[in-house]
Image 1 (cartoon, rainbow, N blue to C red):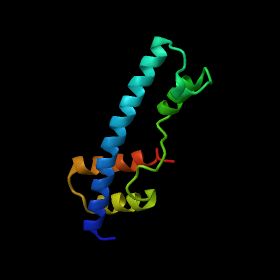
Image 2: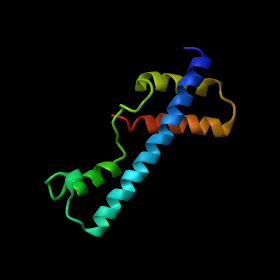
Image 3: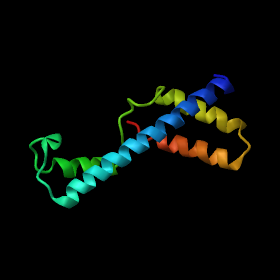
Image 4: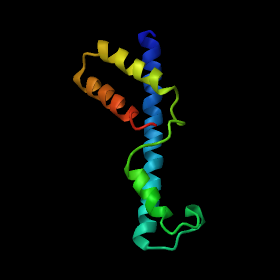
Length: 107
């Protein structure tokens, strides 16, 4: 993989993470409002009275499905590591390292 391809992959991964974070924030806010309001589980939680609490626990675990990723995790990891080899800017180095850690949450 060349540096240009790696940069493209990492940029797409970054855009995807922005969207995933926004969606998770909205889901978390809605779920917290439901839990704090002690509402009866609605159809979105099924018939299990503890379903919304299980969903909250799963969201707090930070693990998520890999389906929103624009490339397979191994390809993204390779691209991040390649860019880390050449990057000189401290801020960008930390951002790339953060991307590697964040990638671990996709199971």
